[in-house]
Structure formats: C-alpha cells, structure tokens
Length: 163
Image (tube, rainbow, N blue to C red; front, side, top):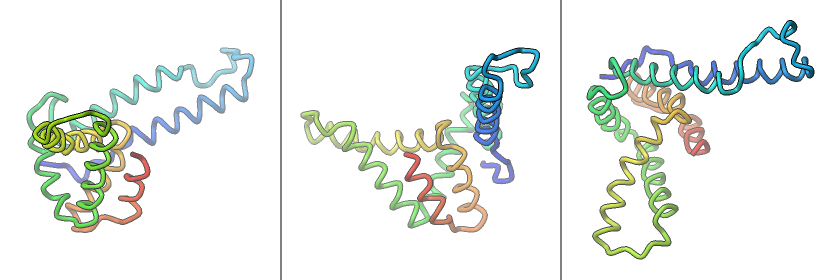
C-alpha cells in the first residue's frame, strides 16, 4: 500500500536547482548566456519539481497517476498507521483544531455546520500533509512509523513548524 523504500527527492532537487540558479545569477549579473551553465528560470524549476512531486507521490502509493484510487486507499491505510503513534496523533489533532479555528472562527455557524466543518478539517489536514510543501517531511514520518513504529520527535516538530 505504501512504498517505504522509495526515496523522495523533489524537495532536495528544487533547493539545489534554486541555489544553483541564484548563485549563477549572482556570479553573472549581466546574464551573458555564453557564461551561463544553468539555462533555466525559476518557472522551469517550479514546473520540473511540480511534475517530480506528482510522480513521486504516485510512486509511494504504487499508482499510475494522481487520480488513481490507490492513492485514496493508501492515504487511509497510512493514516490509520500514523494515528497509532501518540505524538503524531497529538500533532494531528492540534493541526485539525488550528485549521478549524483559523479558517472558520469568524463565521456564525450552527453547531451542525461547525461539526461538519470539524469533520472536514481532518481531510484538509491530511491533504495538506501530502501537499508539495510538506510531502517530503510527511514521507519520512510515514516511513519511520511503518518501519519502526516510532517517529523522531524532531521530525514531527519540523512538520509542525512547516505548517
């Protein structure tokens, strides 16, 4: 259901390409193309890494494409495993509460509407954890939980700080 042996690299590649582009721009202020080893733009980096992220997300769920049901089933499986970890469960509940409070605090809602939105906040947090911005950290947490039954506290802290 989830490939813990897969190495997620899109974030590291994005950081390296961005670093190289920035350093090349700093060293080549006139942007002379004949001196330019890196002939790509910031948009090129985003496009490349967006595609790589989607490919890697599919790969960990053994999926052919991003719309494959294997991803939905895999996410349910993974989060059942993740919520076995008490520290992750505390983090997850804090994220749900935070998402709900920050998003809907100023709205006048009935109790039924509030409960529906609280239930949906669960899904929103899961989707956020698998977003491009967080998936590289989430994957490490999932691998640790599935393989060892323990998630390093600093990794959960990194997730929390990234949100």
